[in-house]
Amino acid sequence: MLNWVKTTASGLTVLPAAAMIDPTTPQSVALITHGHADHARSGHKHVIATPQTLDIMAARYGQNFAQTVTPLAYGERMALGEVKLSMAPAGHVLGSSQIIVDYSGQRLIAAGDYKRSSDPTCQPFEIVSCDVFITEATFALPVFRHPVPSDEIEKLLQIKHLFPDRTILVGAYALGKAQRIIALLRQAGYNQPIYIHGALRKLCDLYERHGIELGPLLPASAGQAGSAQLDLVGEIVIAPPAAYASKWAQRLTDPLFAFASGWMQVRQRAKQKGVELPLILSDHADWPDLLQTLKQISPKEVWITHGREDALLHACDKMGLKARALSLIGYEEASE
Image (cartoon, rainbow, N blue to C red):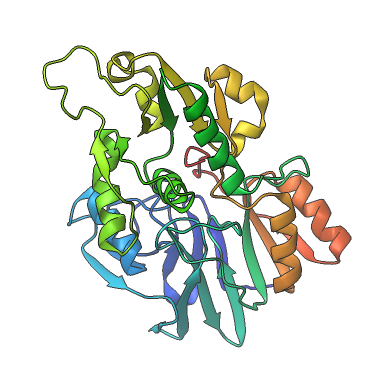
């Protein structure tokens, strides 16, 4: 339908703007949907993103992650040649955006990664009409129906109550998932200190600078300098998944392993990771929310990026929506 957007090995190119959306290799102009490493890479000459995403990239890659940057807040507009560019919330993580591109009387929206469930750490997904909607398909199979987030947090609190002599270790991705769990715990009335792995501190501090209150957070090694054992019995500890197999985790007293991910709905994945408490908590839209989003937007055409493309193509056909798979590579599931 659109002849001014081209799929290349590095991602999607908006030809009249000479810019790429979430490119996988360094580019002259990069339009970035959010701060996860498979979408936001360093080395571009010029990066355009929300102020929050730019701060996240600076925290991860250093202040010189790009030669120049342009912050574009939700609702603001800017021109790239004859192209009009704006951003709308995607509900994925702090600063995540749908990139809205208007050109020659047509509108394309690249939603990036998005979700529709509640999240106190980022603005909710916004419905914006368009001609072409580019959707992810991470959980685009009918089997994926994510539970209410507050119910999963209640499971976590119940486990803590049932096993007061163990350390509750929650594996969560450093950007977005960890902060969401903390904020949901606070919403559930858990006001005690939460212990965090050192790898989470920088991004938790960044979230708080952007007005996301996380309550008392203590380092997971608090008061244990020189000790071989981390005495955090009965506490909730949050760490990145990579810390599970580290010497740091081995120092915890009888840890009970929990893991927060949409993939925890797949029992085999939980078993493979040695997870005792699978928390089905996703930062991506599940199957019903993907379909609901497409119905609400009702675009003339749907383009499907990384994930389970075939099932969503079939669903679009049944809904009377023209659709095609872009089969982009280089975008991972690790952030789940």
